[in-house]
Length: 266
Image (tube, rainbow, N blue to C red; front, side, top):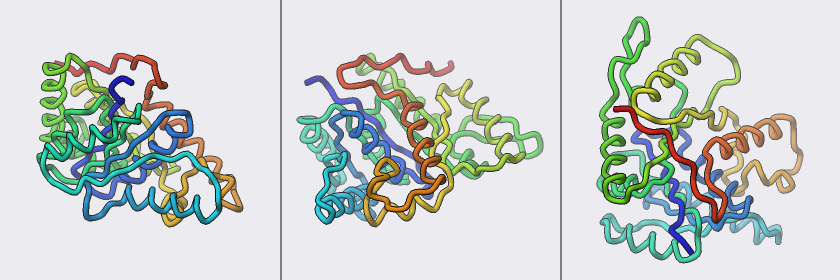
């Protein structure tokens, strides 16, 4: 088999729903026929790993087969350990989803260099936007990209030189509120401006819903409605959000060539 498609979830800020989104992405891709492996860089919190372990337990308890992903925790903190884990997971996977920790460290940077699709989830606020770019306090226009945007720029450049491959950088607007507001529009306008300057795509992620927190103990996702019991209109709407997010990521089907990513601005 060829090289797996690497989807790297990375954001130095915590509380953006990164691990939850990574798990939902892995399971959604498994449900569409991908062979998915998951690598958890957070050896202490292990949110993605615990989610998938809960899913295993639910399958055993209910005696059902659900779409799943093989997973591994990166216990060591050196790059050879990262390469060894990737080699093991690549043996039977066409997609590898990597959940990096919410901090800047050498392993997170090494993982970013592997990305075919780099996903940066962010809450819909200027606090999270500050990670990518700074805005003027009065007119909310972008004044300059941030250190993190420069880090990603350098990583993409290094990968292109080393492999000749581009990186599709996707900024995921997570925990979107379901009502319109001035803040929502201002953040959106600033993101659109940054996207043109820095070279990423912006897509909607998962909304602010209690159901995402309630799914964790059973390891279920919104694609598992048959196991959720009573299902309301909110569940159906949330499932559609998930499907639209996965479609927006544009991960190629097994055997397909990926589309050409958005080119970074000069």
